[in-house]
Amino acid sequence: LAVPGVRQLQPYVPGKPIEEVARELGMAPESIVKLASNENPLGPSPKVLKAIANAQSDLTRYPDSNGFNLKSALCAHLNVAFDQITLGNGSNDVLDLLARAFVAPGSEVVFSQYAFIVYPIVTQAVGGKAVVVPAREWGHDLDAMAKVVNEKTAMVFLANPNNPTGTCFSRRELVKFLEQVPKRVIVVLDEAYFEYVGGEDYPNGLLLQQDFPNLVVCRTFSKAYGLAGLRVGYSVASPVITDLLNRVRQPFNVNSIALAAAEAALEDQAYLAKACQINHEGMMQITSAFNALGISYIPSKGNFITADFGENAGSINQQLLQRGVIVRPVANYGMAHHLRISIGLPEENEQFIEALKQTL
Ligand code: PMP
Image 1 (cartoon, rainbow, N blue to C red):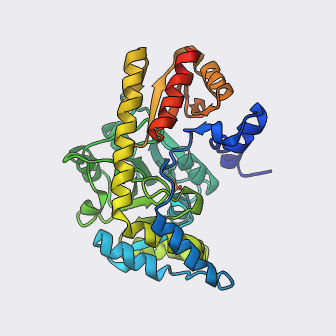
Image 2 (cartoon, rainbow, N blue to C red):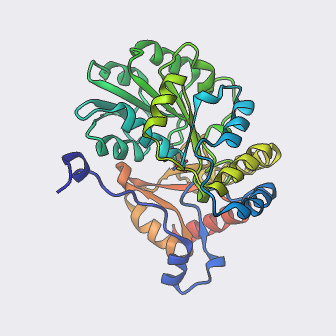
């Protein structure tokens, strides 16, 4: 029935919802801990809640399809121009727009083994051919990726950090890669976890766009800004690329509550700093426990950590679920021995660690 690329896809498997697990176990939802979808455990900033309450007066009108207020705020925050920004219903929506605007049937799209599962979805949905390059130490092998780019390549997806492995590449490695790729190839740099990462080595994609106008940077309000449920993401690209994305974008793709909430979230940089600090501490809490228990893990720069539980990963996942802890199997990424754990609040992390100790 469907086009061949779609038939070959597996459906996206989200983290199990708390209510579903609670019902299955006959437990109260409050006693379940969900560390499965790289969400921000802090909850939204109070400023966001206020903005949402105010936005409710206007629900009868269509949202501002151009996202004037949010885009203006992003321009000021990121020091980019208005005609460089495309808003999406989550950054997944922007990834989809990119494929629809730039990937013709039969053209190739390059990404890494263990890359984010939405890249094959958006590629194959438009009839593109996914070219998956073996990873190096769970991360992108940028040299190998540059080598497979050819005249059929329309697009490359890079994630920095990568989900589900948490790996990062450096500025030097990225620049070397971009220098090798022809400018007619769109390079999408997915920085969904940008706000969590510090350090001199970590490249801010926006600062490379002057030299590499084919570079598109995607970010989101779902992670460090804590708005996963509202679905707001964006890309920053050249005005030429942005104009083309805008032609395939559904009008009103970001709703009015989400627009108002994201604008307020951007203003609350103290909340962002707190979220990143809590993540940093939670990462140390969980990796210390892994070290003590002799569990090996892939060092991560994101708000999640992926650990190797060997052949028992599936049964450990089930036992954690029985103890009310939802983590994320990553077998659909070809990592059947691993589980991905999102970093929670200290007490949530502790509940996971306790459940894990009982399980092992
Ligand atoms: N890119 C990566 C690498 C991700 O991990 C995610 C979230 N799972 C996204 C993009 C999409 O996030 P959203 O659509 O919520 O903005």
